[in-house]
Image (cartoon, rainbow, N blue to C red; front, side, top):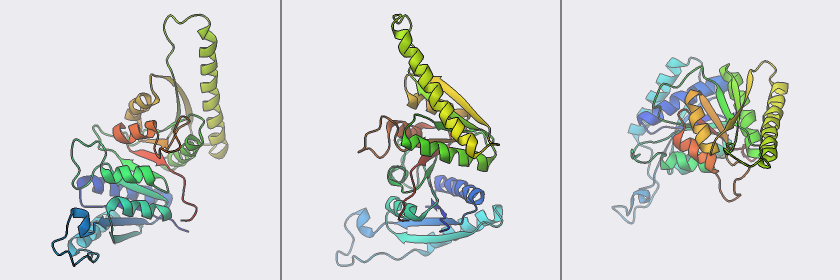
Length: 292
C-alpha cells in the first residue's frame, strides 16, 4: 500500500506552511501528497437556521479553488510530485485523525483559521498529535530561522515509544542528509551532596551512557553512513532540556509517551511540551495503524 503524506489545508498561512513541509516530506519519501480540507456540519456551529434541514453540507467551490491553487503551486515548486485534493464533510481534527489510519505521515500547522494567538497549540493540531494512527508532524511557528541543514534531534529514555522515535529520527536524518543527535536527559548533580550519593550519581551516568550507546549501535547497524552523535544532558526536566536543544535542530522527534508515561495519557509530558514550545517542527512518533 502506497500510503500518502496527508496535510490539512484551510487557507491559513500556518496551513500553507504545513503544506510546503508536507510536499518536501512526500518528495523525500517518494509518496503522493493529499491535501485535505475538513469542513464542519452546520450543527458544529450551533443550532442550524432550519432545524428540519440537517443534511451534510456539500463541498464549497471556494474551498475547492483554494485546494487546487495550493496543489498547483506545490507541483510547480516540486516537479514530479503527485498531489490529490479532497474535501471531507467533517471536523478538520476528526478528519485528519481518520485519514491517519491510511497515511504514511500527517502534517498539521500549530494553528489554523480561527486560532487564537493566546493558544499555543490549536485544537486541530492538538487532536491529531494526541490521537494520530501514524507519525504526526506538527509545524511550529518559527520565532527565528530554522536551520535547514541542522541535525535531527531525538530523545532517548529506553522506552518502547522512544525506540520508535529513534528509528523514525534516523530515517528522517538519512532522508535529509544530516546528522542524528541522540539526547538523554538525567537529573543534575546536587552541590554538596553527601559522599554516599556519589554511587547513585555514577550509576545514573552509567545508565545514561548505556542507553545512548545501545541506541547509537542499533542505528549505526542499520545506517552505517549516518553520522550519529550521543549527547548526555543534565537538566531539571527533560522537557526544558529538549525544548532548549530544539533551537539548533531542523527537526525534533519525540515518542508519544516516555518511560514514565501513564497508559491513559496519549501524549506524555515531554511530547506535549515539545509540540507546544519547540523552536522547530516536531515529529510525534505514533506507530502505524496495522488495519490501515
